[in-house]
Image (cartoon, rainbow, N blue to C red):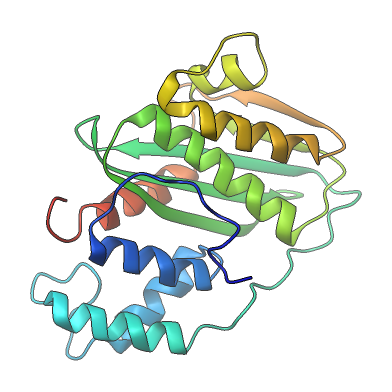
Length: 220
C-alpha cells in the first residue's frame, strides 16, 4: 500500500500541480515543514513552492526530487498510552467555496509532535475543509500513535453537532462524516472542546498553507 492508498478522501478536485504537491506531502506524512523544506531545497535559485519566479516546470521537477528524497513511512509519534493527547484541527477556504486546505496539530503532554497540512480542493467550501482537517488528524493518530484518549479542539460547530451530537451531515460532507466516525470508533475514548474565534489554534496556519497549495496551477 502506498502513502496515498489509505487516504481516498479528500475527493475534491485539485489542479494537476496541486495534486502532485499533495502526493509528495503524503510521502512526508503531511508534515508540512519537512515536505516544503525538501521541495524548496530542490528548486534551483532562491525560489520555492510559493516563489513568484518559480515556474510550474521547475516546481514539478523539484517535486520529483523531493519525492525521491522522502524518508519512507513517517516516524511513529511518541508513546501516548498514558499521556494527554490533544488534537487541534482547522479548515480554511478562500472565497468559500475556493481553494481550501486542512490543518492539524497533535500535542502530547503539551508538546507539539506533529504539525500537518494538506490541500483539500480548488473550489471547496469551508465545511468540507473542516471535516478533512479532522480526518487528517485522526488518520495520523490511527497510523502513528496509540493514545488511550484524545481531546479534539475545533472551531466548527457544524462538525461538532454532527460527529458528537445528533445533527445530520450535509450531503457534501457525508463521506467525510462516515470516515471520521470510523476513525473515532478505533479510539478508546474521545471528547471535544469548541474553540472560539479568539482562541489560539495552531492548526490554522497549516490550513492556510494547504489552501495556498490548493490555489496552485490552473483553476486555483
